[in-house]
Length: 507
Ligand code: UDP
Image: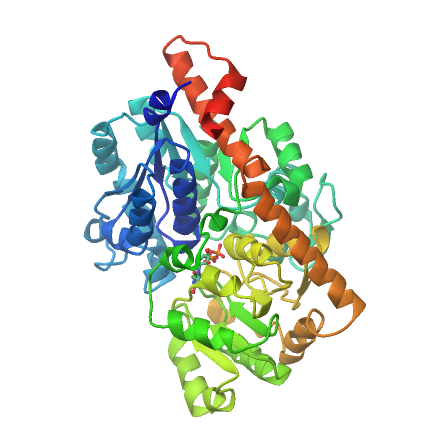
């Protein structure tokens, strides 16, 4: 295998327009392009603006990577102009329209990919871009699915759907996740939407379709590393027969501060100020609080969280974003004097935080997270304990992995998922005392606290090693490239020796 053959490989990434899906796929694309293959990322212009500089930097370093823009059909799907990412939707009622827009992408995507040279060797698509199945069929290109979660979740999800134990319990009753290596206890009200399907038939049917497309793919790429969840990777592969390539934590491809700040340039105004502020605090002293790119916590819950943070008397960064109840929060922050009371000690980010940059700062001592999978991994990479505050989707399962399996976090005690469109019904689940107690369990003096911090440091070290040359994630990327070489070889009637090929990708 010579480098000419590699440069004829062309991987096309089609991410979902939502930060929690787009950012890790862009990181993956950058990593793959560093392996001498050609990579394209297909997205809308508005989405690409935020990571264009990061891609330009990769190109300057010698990677063959490009962004291919495709118009996002907002008007055709009944979306306000400019709503090209899920986190910019004025209301989650528009999710159906957003899905329509995703389906309308089929023809423009097909036309765009047909024109590409070298012709695409593989499409790596987000699981929610279901029109990709038709496109791949027509163009005779293998699809690989990006799932966006962990193998721990994939296995639990698979076993729960098979076993259906959740169907015979009431919403608040506890049950054990069947046939997994750890004792994981959950209640139905903590499970993602697929286990509690609502009355929206269109959304329910779409979930089924997502699973069908994944079934037919050549395998899935997962943003995780084997050392974190080895038993779950193996068992999931064994049970489903799917190829699984873990090549994360992909955010580690952002090595220096410049990479970290270019990762998603949505709002630069806080960046310098925030880093300067962090520089003024001693190591491991600052609490970082962020609930990801979407927010489903009610203003009442956020206010309780704020009061808890204030009561810790410790320095904190609190990222307040998301559309739900924004005005009410703003009123409380200003009129009730919270901002004034925590001035100097509390750094509020009302918008987009440079999360990976913040987490890598030595002053960060704990991450209070909603347990989105990316945030969970980014916290693991930072080597700090996590205080887990799950809100929706698979976040309660991610909490279980953090607290029960790898044991690097403590719960605030959130009880059940806040359902989409039902935020107003959600009561305060976590009190100010819960917030203070959980933070104090991992900060300050004491053997138990030191043990949890030590485990967090060890996992960060394992994550870093997995990504280095010779590490498990590095190797898995070689295996993925090899799989595609093999598929292409079969299409052209060639037989190639595996060991020689792997060596070529790693030189
Ligand atoms: N993120 C960020 N700044 C923010 C909020 C989120 O950089 O203010 C990034 C974060 O680093 C992560 C992604 O957005 O990579 C959020 O993904 P996650 O899976 O954690 O949560 P989601 O937003 O999907 O709920």
